[in-house]
Length: 380
Image (cartoon, rainbow, N blue to C red; front, side, top):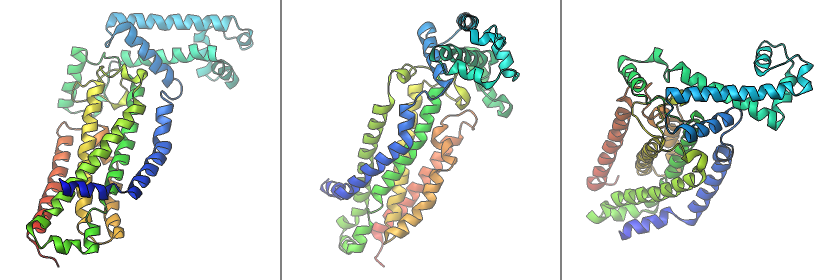
């Protein structure tokens, strides 16, 4: 334990801590701040999310056929309110617009000039009701379409799962596609931030011992040869501490009332957008827990890979050059399957477990081979 404590002090030296703080601050400003500050973002996304929360309050976590009829009736009431706004405003008489339906038809046909729409949506009171109508129509279309999956691309097993969700009412779950869009975007950025910062911590792990000649002393005894493993343990402890701080900080910014109300709800939903459906009937909080756990697994794998590369070379330039292809790989769409699109029904159910199994096996075999070399090999 003393060795691990000593190595942790070396890993978390003041220069490294200052660099990590600056890196996290800059990354937060560039990537995270906008998605935390502006959620939901834009129109009608803001209105769709707001209406979805109203649906939760009125109907609970699922919407049955009777509740859907009531929801459609609310749309008609909103249209009647828009009709009153149009009929009571002389501006619309100039363009012979007498109702919301009349406005929508003429706007879609290009009969009305753009300034009419600007007149509507630039005003907060008028814009609110018109955007709400747009959001409600969007949600109704999703529910009436009765398909939460692009079935043309699905295998028999995938279609069977979709049909199961259709029959047992799983897809009637009230969920927000805007929320899933926001979380998956942030999750992708978290993957880059956490893995890259973890790799940075571990790069100097073995190189200093080699350059200072300490390794020659370590190889003279059994206890010294075990130092390779103890350093790796210290690296895992260090990145775990950093991971806990990063995740805690993330949810400090992420969790609020307009998101947390959806935590218990199923993510397989007519309202779930193009991300779903999923192989498993998961709630949003369960999906979050699983993806955070997978993120930690990826961190451990990349950190172990970095430690192994650090043990092979004598200078930082070579180590960083060897790691560049893996960082590029990390940024590739391949890791959508590994993390962001966890359990997506558009991929075979066994694909993600197989990819993780192969990745883990390769890293473990590489690590065991290197550890055996450290325990029994001679210095060259």
